[in-house]
Length: 207
Length: 218
Image (cartoon, rainbow over all chains, first blue to last red; front, side):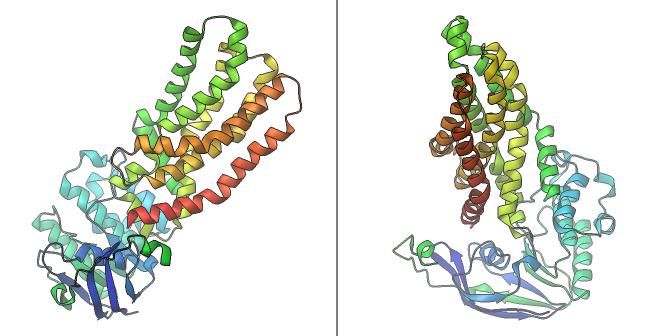
């Protein structure tokens, strides 16, 4: 299943950030989003994940087949790592919990409450949710934040493994990822003219 | 969905205050009433129904902002919105877990407090029945208000202003069930209306809640 985006425009309520974006990703390919701060990398990823409806155009993917990792980890601080993973396992009906734990090397911190973990350990736990979703498309927003070099290598290997199993990844990152078959997408080219709609409610009422 | 319920209850039990806040507030409020009103058993008995119902409303309100706010802040809510579960169902489950941690304890302790306020014996049965039927609608209506204000910092006051007027029908019919029961009159009419309010909110409001959440997550 390849991932096609055609003429996609997205942005916040009445401000378009990215206009007429076109790209196609084949299984096994990863797309690295490039562009300065504020250009719309996060907005685009949230749009692909189905959190923000596109202003126009379409992305040919089912939002349910997208696993999204945002800036925040989405972990419950009061629960242990294992309890957090159990929760996502229940939501996604995943059967690969043991495999996920060993791939992300979470064995040692399984019974720790997340509030007692370091930022890097929390990020690693959050990233392990990707594996549990068993989704073919990963939308990653700065996935390597707070990870040390050892864990960057660990995650790169997991990502490469995902791609080798005909997965697709769309990634916004400032750290160079050593994966095969990566395509760089310069978002500067698709920058929208900032048009502010005069009627703030038009978007809600016309739908 | 069951795993969401399990997780919410687990989080509530871990974060100390969540489980006991509403019920302690409910207890304190009712225990305070005789100090203010005086110890005349007849007066207390006459106002007991109203006091217990109003206290139930307010203590329910106290923890409403926790329903979505915490999940919104740590990012779980947006991940849940991208998961292949309908957000409306998630909203319903979260309202259920709110009811289990506030409404249910209130129902359980209400007979004791009825006794404390000298609620006449005939009213006890109707108090429990009306709270059992009425409190689920409090959680559901409240979760709708919580979804509307989820993105706002310090949205608690706005939430109260939004939700309290919507609680009026539940309060009127809930208290009417007990008061008519006390007088030995037929309680059928208020009981039917109370059930209708609860049934309608359970059936319709999760849809509105889901929509409000989607808008706030954009």
